[in-house]
Image 1 (tube, helix red, strand yellow):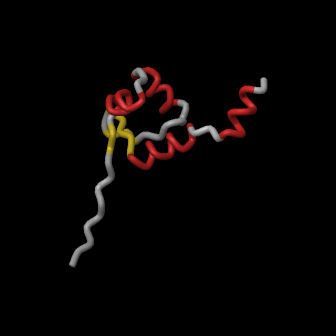
Image 2 (spheres, rainbow, N blue to C red):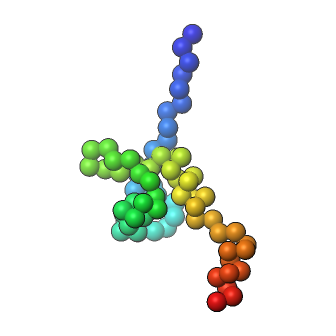
Length: 72
């Protein structure tokens, strides 16, 4: 019996814009500055679920970091 692999979920730039309420220029800026990983397929970018999860994780600020920001 063949094992079926799960096909990864891909999001478009427009999907990301809708999820995070940001503009197209912001998404491209995140990709170009490597804060958001994306796969280029032809002339279009696609964002995998794994890359989306990594982006969200990297944007999370813990309470200790927040306190440092407010103490300035």
